[in-house]
Length: 515
Image (cartoon, rainbow, N blue to C red; front, side, top):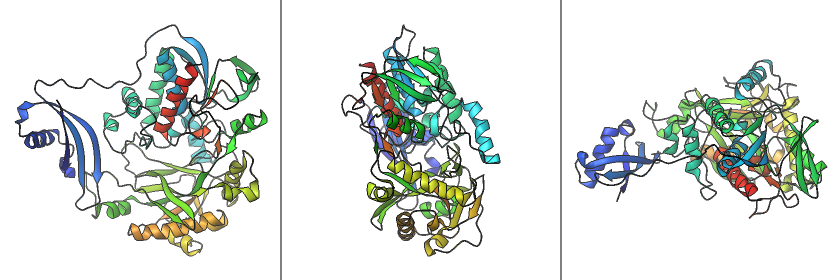
């Protein structure tokens, strides 16, 4: 029987396999020659005490013991495919729904409004350099969805929603580093993800999926509370036997379409705030307690949460060594997000710092309709744009924001379209500004050095999750009114990241195939 061990190892030895073998042999009172193999189960960093250590969980196989078989992602083979199921959106939810359908012998027909990843890059360059947004191809829309060009973090708390390791192994099978199967906070990197997404697309096509790019869903043909066909680009109608709706959190026209078609939707809580950027060296020194982290420790991250002014305040999508990116999907709005390359070797650390927005915050101004929270979200994004009539982002030094004074100058910032000094309290709703000020003051006490006027707040971080939920039955995952509609992923209000969206895609595909 294999032995599971937990080892505490200094950073300089944490990736030295010969040293790890020796430690395992000593712990089990064996010679190294008695060990057949070691499987790494988990690798994490413990920075609570100094010096910082790595904690490794490993499985040790002694000579003569059977080694665990290699884990598998999707098991696909050439076969005659059964009914055609529409998948709207080619982000992680739609992509993994399509893989699951193929594994079960059904043909996915994927409708993606945006472009393939290589073509999408040109639109991102135009956005960053010419400040022009293509509403069909941007950081949110296109092959791979928002995750492709916004970091590729694979950490999730959704431990009971499905086979997380199957999702991770699928990424490894298509080019991701095997370390994502082991690291406590796995991450692929924006520079690596496009190639992996292309490889997944080629797998889907090779086994019979149909993928239509530049295909914006403009209508659903509905008869007797059943979708009969999907209309794309206001003209072509494609018959389908079910629809998995996996459009992501920013497909506002889809939400509006559902309301026009009297398909029940509802406003839901979300979060809104700013992106905050520190020098990475400052975050490293705070977290690791050393002037320089050295070559054996990765750029440090953080996760912060508190209650302030009666509202939840928390960090979101923390990007060590990353950059702040423009994430708007239409004209007249400013939205920021963050991402990191695979090495996380940039000189800045950025994170969303956001406040929970609940019905009490939007009811008075926007009512209780299904798009009320969306209207709240839009208004703040438009105010951010109005600061400079451009996607140049309003920004303010942290301490200046807390003290409610305009920043006389701004530090260097990674946001390529540029930033300008602005009073963020005039852009953000009052409760958000107050909650952020109190929250950051609290974080500055619990994380010494975090409150710094070298830190820059950039607005606005507003697409943390969907402001709309498309209700579905808990057991069948079908919409409450449309018998063959399966709301899926972040856009439907049922996921919050790449892995959780992928798991939801797998679940919805399984449900749709069972019709």
